[in-house]
Length: 461
Image (cartoon, rainbow, N blue to C red; front, side):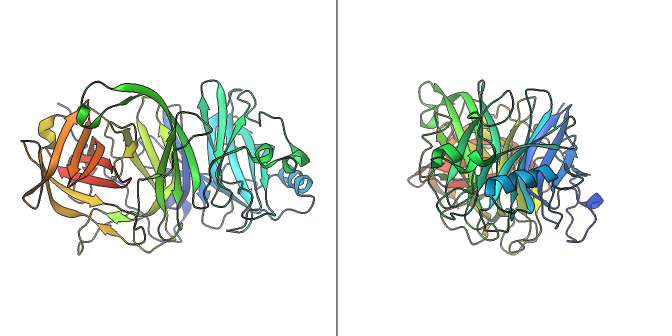
């Protein structure tokens, strides 16, 4: 009989040698990841941060074990891209490095890579371009420049971090980084180019909206946006009372704060693809660890710049870059985590490395017992250690250090709501591999009414 919980996935040991050759990397050195599936194989495209000024490609058969396979532009930046930039800027471009790619299968059957070609860190001289290839790993050929920014820092968006999403037969690109906000630009799904047909010098003319698209988040503190389209999402009253309503939701995630210190993933939602994203955001992550204060083990340090990826068999994941030692900002790793929605229609994810588990119906008996838990709040610059003493009792009580602190309830297949004091948390229960304990168990990811999450891990089975 198949186990209810994942078995030991035999994770590949994470490389810590900053000078390790690419053949040994595995998850190491992946920054700003974006996932695509092709022919039953998963590919992760990411920013190169080993000084190569190119993108990195990894592949995996199981989303657990990863192999570095090369670069999409083996010959470097094509000359026609530089010539087009010269025409757009009216001067020699400052751009020299590639960041944050996204790859989709285009209407012509080819693979379309959306990338950004930018200048020094913190400079908004950047462009977003489209390149195409016959094979998922390339080589890719430059097709066109879509957005050009630079010269008015703080008053225009930074043309980096493109991500593609579809609303039926309409195609959109979300992008932007810090000053200038998060933008959404409509594209032509037949060609992958701008729907308005702008190109060349026209990219630098016209109104702000004409050049850059709609500003959907007026913020100076977000980047790496991605939009997930959820159809007929069940929306329940707390604790599953009554019957659910159903609605379409556009879930926008982005990362906020300092990349090397207190980076955190946030969530907004709307019922329209290009407007109406709710403010304030819901916080989904910051630096934390499942180890207790004096224990050794991996951390989640400043995880962020994520993709929301759905596999061909319907599994949903959040993939981001992570560091495993608090304070070490140089060593990045690809982190893949199983995701779900809670009863309020908010996206949540398991704060555990993916180990082959799937969403399934959770029984009430599986939730009765002890949990380690990580409560996050507005503070993001300190490492939050896991705590003990939390348990779900058979009678529906939540106990904290043996004292009643609230109540809990399970409804639907895996929706879990509970209270701690006066705060209501709405979450989802998922099987998980618990690395600290070295065994399978249950994890609950929940968002509080105040917009901050709590994560629970419990040994089961």
